[in-house]
Length: 242
Image 1: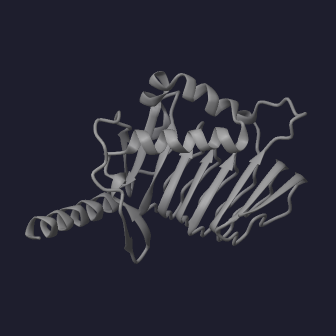
Image 2: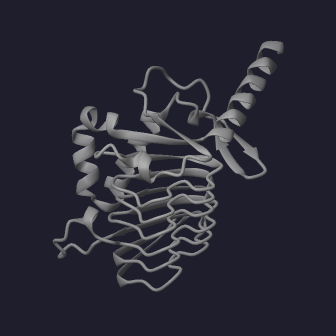
């Protein structure tokens, strides 16, 4: 594994096409197109240690972050600009707020937002899943519901029968997006966010998990859910036949 550490302000397209096995850590701030075309690498961005600003109230990366990412992970200890994770097709991201048009045209992967979003969230989102911390209870007003449904995040009731992935033409899909492992997946990513960025927001949520979990809203594309249900049913029939 190659680990590279930076300080200061990064230019546009920081970490573009970052490959598996390479990790970028930036103490400072990113510009537009951070993680563009990300393909397996990991990017973590956090404020410098001597900055006393409240991360969840300040921009840490610019617009169109993770454009066209296919795999990998991003952890941003702060707020992102507009069109966050646009056309994401398989990467995972944790951020503490977004501007308008978050998860636009997303087809795969996972996005966790530990704060407020802008308007028109999930416009054209056909795959993947997002979890949004909706403390004010008004996220529905800012979400584009033409292709997605909003659901609560259920508490973990049982172990997942299978975490096996399936590939479709639009990207990687996960059977555990069908409600059986939501709490585990969400908590795991917030724990990683704390590990890689030292986020005080993540620490607060984890220390008060029972209070915060009901405040999360799951954003699930309706056609994606239907496709996963059909795949799961098909697999069940094949197992019974065997």
